[in-house]
Length: 341
Ligand code: DAH
Image 1 (spheres, rainbow, N blue to C red):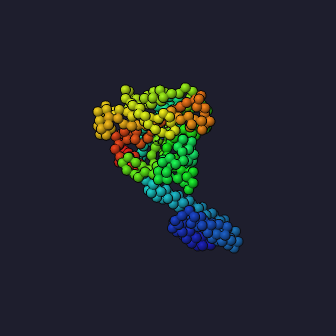
Image 2 (cartoon, protein in one colour):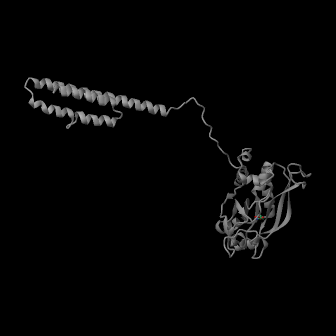
């Protein structure tokens, strides 16, 4: 029996030292010390021993059990230490290395110009409104006094969704005038910036998608003088105090009278230069007094209320402000270009 225990001692210690995982160790513990294990099997022989031998063998067996347990604990400690060591090695991090700078973008230059314009109008008590880019021909044309058959309704100029020419991509932000008049309490002071779409070939000054800013005021006793004063103020805020403007008569179906506003070239002071293409003046927007037919169509009594409206191109404004000579640069989103602003 003594020899059996000695064999078990050698075999178990060897197996424990060779084991490579906590699971394997647990299996060995069961194998050697478990209820059906090898030590138990040896102890079953106790009955055959004499009364003197029994306590001696019992003591030896206890010693063996605690030695095997100690060996298992020691090996378990070694294994977990080695595991930690390996983990630390794999996850090693050199905190002295310089960090990687995240590449942050910034607002598109054209939207900086838009923000500036929004600020100016908010300061004057205007509301910023947003509306659909997929629009009904009714709102894009008819309610704006642009009758059936008008050249701007042609399929060659407008992106239509339906054969019956009822649904389209808005060609201007002016339908926002109608939406505002139909939905809002009077008086109204609003601007509506957004995308518009026309069937134009792409070149240095054209794009099938571009941005406009619509503006409108409806109240009692509003006159052309209010329109001029307001727009002059806006222009001075954008281009600096004393910027000279001129208003030329023009025609738009939804305003009467209508005009276009030019600013005197801020580069050459009106003498003519490349910025103003030698004209001395730069056209910035179309405007006018909201047509009585348009007011009445939206349920507003033109004998009581009047209003003015304007529409301007945002790209053109941004190009002027940042001296960008090709419209395509605004949309191509080449970071080498955008990073300059
Ligand atoms: N919607 C016009 C265009 O796209 C611009 C315009 C002219 C807007 C006169 C207006 C306006 O509100 O009163 O050419």
